Image 1: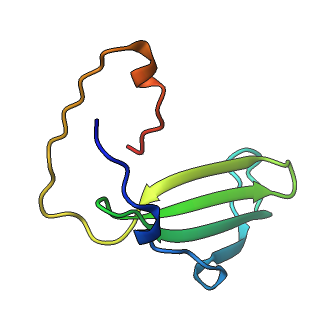
Image 2: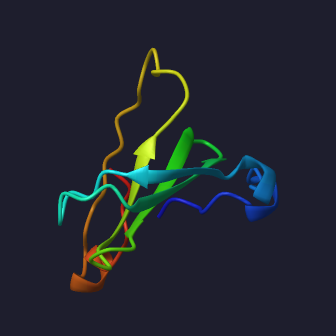
Length: 95
């Protein structure tokens, strides 16, 4: 089984990196009273990601997602996984 990277090597995100966008379009009610918060962070042995959260003050719609950030990788790697028990699929995967 693959080892989890050492957490101490993760890029620490702080409040100075948080970007906030006010009066965003809400996909639920179509209003423009949404508030988007974005936080870029790096995952070791992977790449930079952006954690985003949208909250609409009109309809209380909430949405969170993780997307890739930074530059596009030139080359990738192939990872194979052998599942031997049903508990092996009880994992969170960033696609």
